[in-house]
Amino acid sequence: MKVIRNINNNIAHCVDSKGREVVAFGKGIGFYKADEEIPLNRINRTFYNIKDTDYGIIRNIPTVIINTAIYIIDHVSDELSVVYPSSKAISLADHLQFAIERKDMDIYLKMPLLHEIRQLYPREMELADESLKIIKEMTGESLPKLEAGTLALHFIADRLNIKKSEDENYGDIIKNCTRIVEKDFNIKIDRESFNYSRFITHLDYLIRRLSGDEQIESQNEKMFEDMKQNYPDSYACAVKMRDYLEKELERNISDEELLYLVLHINRLIVRVEE
Image (cartoon, helix red, strand yellow):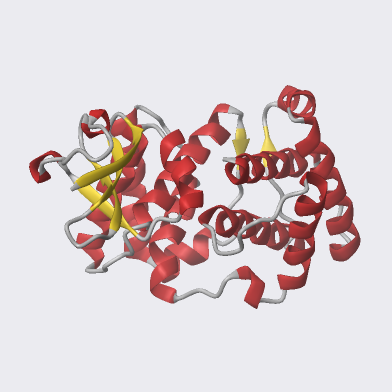
């Protein structure tokens, strides 16, 4: 396995013996220089078909979070006899990192469909409950029990072949929200990137929460003012998006939901700029 570039101390962008680009994981392999060969026994895991726009995600997620996500996906795959795409662990790691950030900000999601998920997919929910314990053991982070619902959705989604938001009733609203971000920041968002997929997924959840009169609860009012000051451009964009959504959905959007929207807009534009 030959190094193309280092991502961090334990992750490297490589090319394999067949000329295929791959992201390799292994303790200390990030210290190998470009064009050096990494012994295969130093590599613990490889991921293919990773987009250039997603390397920033991998670089900014702590290795312990990535290793935890890999362990969970391997465990769930064995228990459910399911073969997930190689990128599944990366998307889960990103979700875990954001869940931890939300917890640290005292932002908690309601899960209106949690009971239905537990009834329809009991085994996935059991594994999600187990995953919360694994996360605690491997990272020291205690996530709220409601996060089991979002974890279960990760385990279920690829198996159900769920349509993307742009193919559903809310597609036009999501497209217009995306245009608001592109216009405000004068950027072009790659619609095929993982960053965008994550962004529209959360927009879809937001729209569904609003339609069902369910909104995020926050226990830290000061955080809202801090975000306005620290991310003024993202906040201004979020306000425009809020005004548009309120008009389209005929629902009022709380400051807590606006805060969450600021976070997602900021994450999207930062990753695009990288």
